[in-house]
Length: 630
Image (cartoon, rainbow, N blue to C red):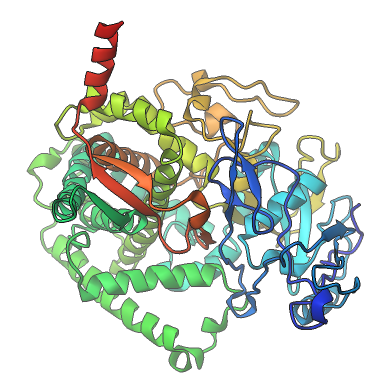
């Protein structure tokens, strides 16, 4: 039942406050099944249902935080502890120690409850309000709690804790209204506050007016000739990874244990460096100060996106907090490198009109990169600072997304041998032993569907953040209030892409890993047109048009990611090259893989896999042999 007060109720106390009766901030779970190998949402030992209906062990969520690094709680349930969730409260029954039922309160929750009632005292009109413990938001990824409340409260609800209050959206009808129908009524809000010190006025954190100007300049850069040239870059960088792995296998007797998330991260960094600003990090094969600086800034961006109090805004923190001193040093080194690259590009500028640039033969351009295009565009008079902001934004956003997509695609494939066999057969048939081309990517349909399904189950990012610039009335959504919900200017919103992508109202078997789902139509409901692949024929990947905003891997509307096709193509090439060359299995069990979240969803301790060599073409040969035998 929704409350008229936007607050989170008090839970049980953390361990140690009330003896054997205390609850350690137990993980709560919706009453639903998760796919084989999916990240668990409940107590340790959660059982999950696989894509084939069999039960498998779920993975217990690794520690995550939401603007709360200093307030992170170790929220794991005691063994055999009985936990009830009624009216947002957590009650602990007696346990194996023989203690009597009891209840006490977390100091974190008391403080948050006080701040909530002081700073967010008003009601929520006709909008449901999430009730629960603030401790629910810590110790596991935020979007697990948001899904629990989605199942309880419906497509839209208000969530308030401490000084923060958000409207959480889990419905394609409401998402479409915000992202497309009233796109200029919203900006990036909290996200811009966090990222502007790092990305400046880049496309992600930019205010509306700055964004309009920069998007007009950047979007044409991702034209067909450039993308075709970049496929060659993807292949060359992928070959570096293959050569490295071949070397490791040669010295390991045919099988090696390796953290594939780290390898994907290095691969993505090299691709972004060459394709965006013509800088070869060489991170697959070497370490260098600039690589360490880049990763330092990436970690800081993640840290800031998940921290409760923006302490870095206070000047003393810049020299008192070690990580902030390191961040300042890293930023200075990256800025100096980017400035040198921008100046070099300007010194060799060959100014041309947009049409001429888009028809340029990039195979003959020495430094074919996004930076080269932006510098050479006639009438493009961006300052060095604006170019730097654009490049930094693409570095962070492009690197994080691709590394995460490949990681989770591999995680799911390692548990689905039939999908691996189908993917390898396609790669052998389409590519043979040559490097991928743009035409090949279009033929690698199942590989593209694997990438799309990875983005559905593990969206990057799992939340889109917006702030209303003016009063608005949001639709009620599926089974929501028919009159909708009025919100004032300045309202912060989460569009939970994770919830929309796993909504049982929009998807059949939403927890299952099934790439073929994107080839099928799904009927809609009032206000939502359903999923129909024929709405966007020839599209490189399933998009918000096909899904009527029930699939938002790159956002939607005017502020949709400009590098969506680049990211998909890069992921397809990387995955295809590895599947052609290697057999990949998890080094442990799916339960060993824990999750951490921030700007993107990634693992806590890496994706450790067992890699062995396969002979390219073996899938096709096996299929041909089977046909002859029959």
